[in-house]
Structures are given as C-alpha cells and as structure tokens.
Amino acid sequence: MIADLKPQVAASDILYGKHIQLEPIANRHRDEMRKAADYDHIWTYMPQKAMRNLFNRWFDDCLDKMTSGSQITYAVRRKSDQLLVGATAYYDIQIENKRLALGYSWYTPAVWGSVVNPEAKLLMLIQAFENWLISRIEMGTDSRNKRSYQAIKKLGATEEGLLREHMMLHDHVITDTIVFSILACEWPVIKMRLSQRVESC
View (cartoon, rainbow, N blue to C red):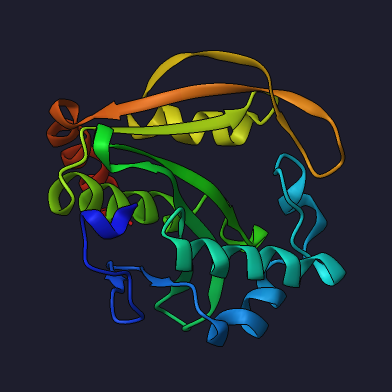
C-alpha cells in the first residue's frame, strides 16, 4: 500500500502546477465532478461509465479505494476559472516492486488537446519518481483509442506490447490494451521535454 511509502494521502496533498492543480478526491468534489463527467463520449473506452445514475457508484468506488490505499484519484482543477475538468489516478500500486500505474484519466471535452493532460502527467510523474522513488510507471490504453495512444506516445513513454482481450468495458466489450512504461532512468529527459511543453502553453 502507498501508506508504506508515504504516511497518508490527505486533502492537503494538492499537486500545484502552472495551469492546473490536482486535488485528492473527496466528498466535496462530488457535485462539481458530476457536471464535468456528464458527456457520453468521455466514457467510450473506459471500464466504468460515470455519468447520470452511474456517477455515484464510480465516485464512491474512488473514495473506497482512496481509503484502502489501492488507488489514489485526483480531481483536476483548472486554475484560470477554478472549474473541475476531470480526474486521473495512480493504481496497481506495488511499493514492494517500486512500480505503479498511472491512468483512468478522463477530461471534459472542452479541455481535450489542451495543456491539462500533459501537466497532470508531469505533476504525477514528478511525485512518483522524485518523491516516492518509484522505478517504473506503467500506462495503458484501449487499442482502439487513437487519441489516448498518441497522447501517451507524445509523453515519451516506451510502447511495450499488446495485452489481448485484457479489459472488459462498461458496455461488456472485451478489448485489447496497449501497454507503455517510463523508467526512472528515462525520467530526466522526459521531464525536460514535458516541462518545456507545459511552460510553452
């Protein structure tokens, strides 16, 4: 559990960036996040669908996993107008192996293609590699999700392979997952490029 590495994930553990801040998810985010999530095409390639009558189940599941330490979900807040625009998470946290996964990210369509996702990844990668001393971070995407695939490639992550029939989505379709990783030894170069990208926006 992450608690073995870091005493706790508390409401004060906000990750501050130039354009966004990442706030550990809490009940106070529920209503605002419900509005951000209310776009059907956000959920096309996601294992859970978190809108309308399905939202509370997704949100409560995130809170339960935060409590157990098995997943850390952040609400993504845009600093320019203080709106919540999505969520992102650490999961499959294996401190004994110094690795974790980063993903389950979704954003309201208005910020697709903007600086929001790159800066969220930058903040989370800095925390994992530099504060928690993680050695390996994994990311994955549905093989059909070309937008997500290109976003991960642009980060500088290494494509490792295809996991066949790996994930069942909310619509009961079983899909393939393309797996990527970043290693600690690769992080300095990736950080420099990603930081320059965020600063230029």
